[in-house]
Amino acid sequence: MDSEMMVALVGGGGALLGAAVGGAAAVVSASIQGKRTAEAGRSAYQGALDVTRRTAQQQAYAKLLSEANAYEAATGAVLGIAGDLIEELHATLSGDLPSLSNEVQQRYRSRIREARNPLPLRAAVRHVGLEGPESVYRAAKQVHSVVVVLQRVLRNVEAIVDHGEGHSTPEMQASVPLQAHINLRTAIDRFADTASAHLNGADGG
Image 1 (spheres, rainbow, N blue to C red):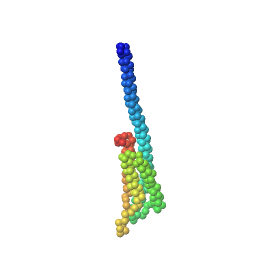
Image 2: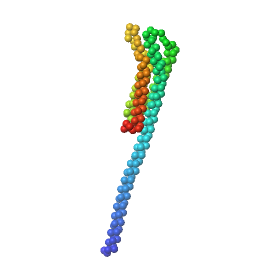
Image 3: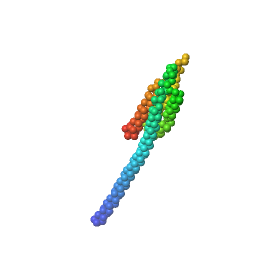
């Protein structure tokens, strides 16, 4: 075989080898690029899901805060008359003449009944439970627990404890509704702080 033929064969083999190596490199590169594209796609998808989830959580938290603030305002507006009814009960059981007419007392009772409807807030707490996380849901349930206590207090402002032998006293002091309301405000603030920490990533959630 002459030298020219050898050069041609070697050159041709080199070209084939180069083509094979180049083709393999292209396949590897395409595979890597495909994985990167898939990972980027998954990352974008997860990012979109996270945005959607956070938006839903934010809306649920805002709804609960709105209902809780409304309930706080409604019950806060009747704290004074609740205290008046308790004081009136103390006076009556002590044998003093009533300072409030029956008409006024009935009007006070009606206003208190209208102010203690927690149903919208209860629904908002359940919505927070659906969206999570558990830390925020616990804070939401605490708001509801305090609301239940306040509701019970307002329902029983004229409750009487019978000590027997004709001796009775009011079940609570005039300051009890106010303290229950302060506890509600504290629970609302705690929920707001917990929800904000979660949405801002400070709780690691």
